[in-house]
Length: 129
Image 1: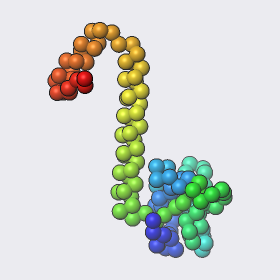
Image 2 (image 1 turned 45 degrees about the vertical axis):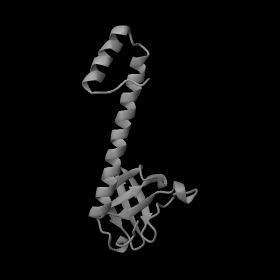
Image 3 (image 1 turned 30 degrees about the vertical axis):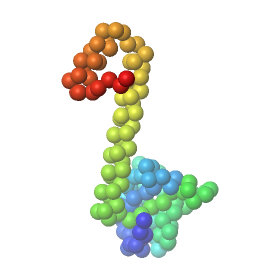
Image 4 (image 1 turned 90 degrees about the vertical axis):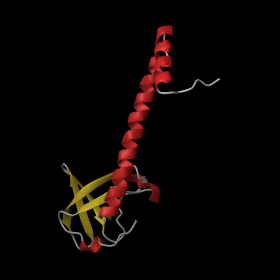
């Protein structure tokens, strides 16, 4: 991702923060304070400092994979990461639904199976042999 524009950050600008090197641990944060070499974001009362030079969070230890990074927001990366967040939300919802279905399957009775076959017929789902 491009770090162009980090030197021009000002209070009120939005930055994209990727937590732990994962594209799924993303948040959009507002810049609350700017110094010549750093900028600060604030969520509730928790402040986080980032370097302007490379976007890394100060105090992010360990390997590069586990560090937090901030990037200036632009319409392209906002749209891209909002889509990733939406995809992850839908996958989590589907996973929860499948978990509920698996619990229900353990309690199936013959009449439940008949209802499922009727639904499958409506949806034109063929039985595997």
